[in-house]
Length: 220
Image (cartoon, rainbow, N blue to C red; front, side, top):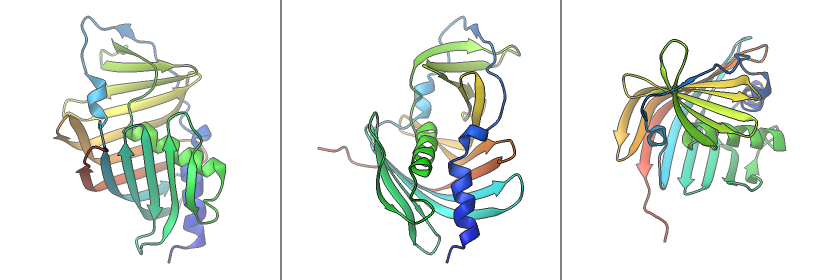
């Protein structure tokens, strides 16, 4: 049975993005030619992903859980469970609409937790909103930048076919996501491992190890 300390650990991890890394948004120079096809890093159509999740707090403490994510066009369904099968949280989110929670065990029954969790899921699995621009950082690294109101997402393609993502809110870094051991499934690039890193006093590392990735039939 999951302990009370792990409940609060998960709550801090998935709802504390405001205390994330304080890196400032870097300048970029326009690329000479379109480069990276960044949308290919995000699965199109309907998918189901199952991950084993490990949490590490910078101040100490850790925990484990299972995460299930179902992508269906613009809708995302997400469940967080213990390894024994107890569902801690289950919800769905449609772009532009409030999160609909169908099950939430305290202390996961807050609007802040639901918004934080679904925000992380959308960042990992869906193409960022905003206008896309190919460019290069000061050191010459290629970058795909998506700019929306108050928010910028930089995606840095890696030589092994994976990617690193930095997100900024009002010019200040809020999270870094690194994909590792990627494989191509159809038109999607599916990482075997994902690290989400946040710093500060409430800093944490969220490691997701892929158990299964399944392309679902298209909805009628």
